[in-house]
Length: 145
Ligand SMILES: [Fe+2]
Image 1 (cartoon, rainbow, N blue to C red):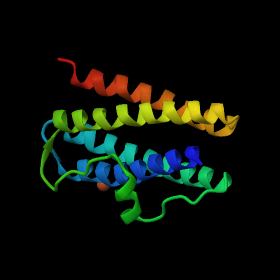
Image 2 (cartoon, rainbow, N blue to C red; image 1 turned 45 degrees about the vertical axis):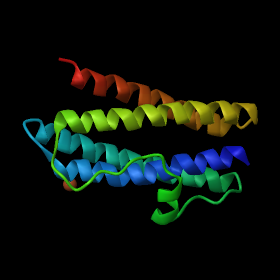
Image 3 (cartoon, rainbow, N blue to C red; image 1 turned 180 degrees about the vertical axis):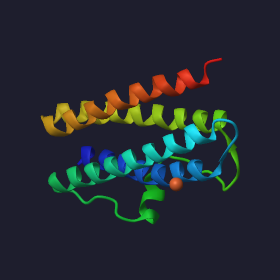
């Protein structure tokens, strides 16, 4: 089923993104450390919620959610970071790229769900689109000079 495949790719992305946000939380350096260190913690906690909600939606639809990092790495489009110090500016740019991709994927899943008459998944991903659009605005505001 196409929708479940897309949901599993999205789930894999969120699983790897969860690790990536920890990398940013730990390797961040510079003047915005205290603000962004806390922000990245907030984001990885939110991401943990998304991981669980998407996996449980897949189960409710009769699918099998990706439950291993090995499989998640095969499916994800998220690029992991090296264990290297990163500035706030660079970290926000990295996040912006990922969040824009998640927003596009969420819109695609929302449309697929609508086509299949699955209003619950459509509603869930409509909420994600709203959250990603807000976050994109905030990340872009951070980068504005
Ligand atoms: Fe921490």
